[in-house]
Length: 78
Image 1 (cartoon, one colour):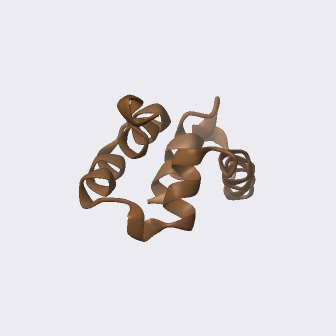
Image 2: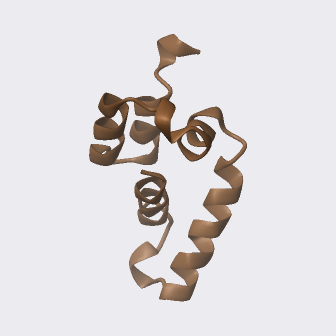
């Protein structure tokens, strides 16, 4: 699920289609580091057993990083 988020982050990066595999890997590492500070991402990373099947399904099907975040950290849960 975390990999899905990182793939979306790369896709949303300007000029993503022109990036080399090394650049893609660098973007993923930067995003992973930045997102570690956010509760939704950390929940998935630290306590994957606490993430529901519905959240996983939603996040895997999410078309954007914002949609992914909404799946694992809905606004009413804040």
